[in-house]
Amino acid sequence: MNDLHRAVNDTPAASAVRPPMKLLIPIDGSDRARWGLQYARIHARRGDELAAELLFVAEPIRNWQVLRFWTRQEISRFQAERGRFLLDDAERKLREAGIDVNTHYREGDAAYQIFEAAQALQCQEIVLPAPESFWMSGLNRNLALEIQERLQSVRVITVDASGLPCADGRMHNTPNRSASRHTGSN
Image (cartoon, rainbow, N blue to C red; front, side, top):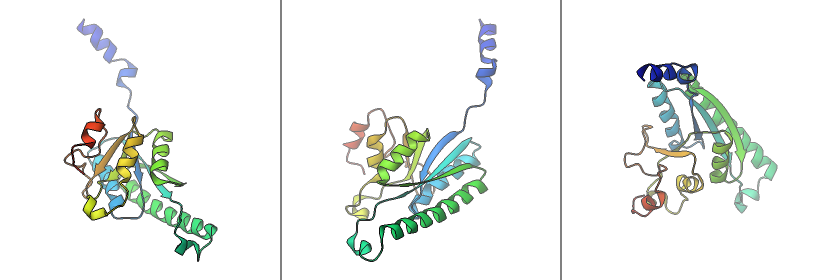
């Protein structure tokens, strides 16, 4: 039986190279968004095979003070230029670390666009900065939580400033997500 086990495991299919793990890393220009780049570089230094899909989402501008002075076309052009600059900068940093990178620009609600991109690009993980505590962020929405609530098939990883996953496992997809949401941790 050992020979049979060895023969099955020595087949070309068993020894084939696995495709690289695909990470979706949203970029928004903040220092916190760069934490996901550090996560990817850590994996690359360890020798993990991975590919990064960088995503910039231009959210709709609804602020009347902005709309009063800029046309929607000017806003769209500005967001596209800013997105291209941020994506190019992040792409360069990951390529220097030997990581395959693709960049994507989308317009719309950030949580929805991240969700859609993760599925369309068949990513295994979405890498987001750890949410700020409620007291630090005020009433800002928790993007990581919004995305995690929509996804079942893609793991949401939240990382700290050094690029390491949150020590308490906060925001990671787990089989019993509803129980972890009610523990009182942020």
